[in-house]
Length: 163
Image (tube, rainbow, N blue to C red; front, side, top):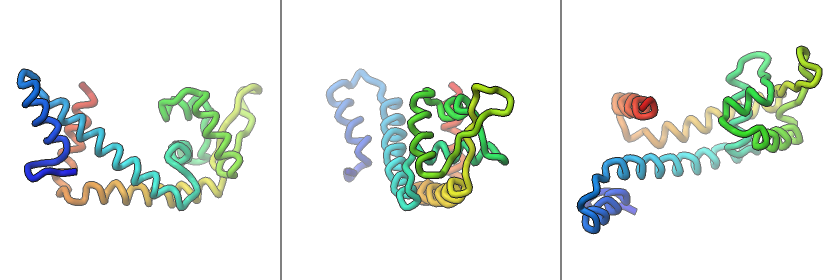
């Protein structure tokens, strides 16, 4: 929903200004927009991955293995750390992907109790296509901004995260 003089976040900020003029709401405005953009992007990414038989959680695993480089394998702990998940949350994702034939679990050559998770050829093919589809959705969401404004936004968000 947009209004004649801004977007939905502006409306919320105006309401707070009316009800609580003592509040400095710039942070609320920034994070409201970040949250809304993130939700919109997440929904679009989920739709982009659907034709490949995966959702965002599965994409995250496949993409992490793909980015690891040849031989496209990591330990479950390395995967969990890279995705900022618990090992329990990672296990459920791995189980789904293994059943779908997109990853395989192999014994670790350096630890008899350890396991490595490796991207299979079908998993590799899926992530190669899905990453392009997801990136196209992200680019489309920012297409109304000039390349310079996109770089500025990227730099500002990086700076905010460092704080």
